[in-house]
Image 1 (cartoon, one colour):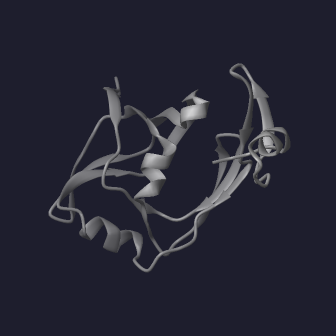
Image 2 (image 1 turned 90 degrees about the vertical axis):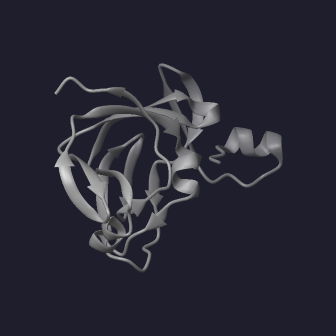
Amino acid sequence: YAYNLRNAKKLGVKSNGRNASGFQGEMPAFFSLTIEKGEKSAEELVKSVDNGVLVTNLFYNNFVNAPEGLCTGLTKDGLFKVENGEVTDSLKNMRWTDKILSILGNAEPGNDSRQVKGFFFGSAIIPSIKVEQFNFSSKGKH
């Protein structure tokens, strides 16, 4: 969880975030995120998927309910069906809605990293990740 100075003091914990103000009011948030690399390449992560979806880019990411960590966004620039470790088809872009801790809590990171700008309130340095569950909430139109 992110704790800004005010909330950390109230809860008796150490501050690890900063304060963000926006249309949803004030909330503690991380302005930079780094996920440590794993052992497998992005290609090896895909090859380990029996039946799933390869998401190459997420954008327009926002909090739906910040205290719960519920977020939403859209896929962009590539969404693909994966069967038996192989990309078999392209898919239309979709909206996703899920709790960030549910997504990252069971993620297997790859051994690559890249900086993602515009990651919620700042930027992030993240590898490719494989997750067991990711909630797509609606189909896209293109």
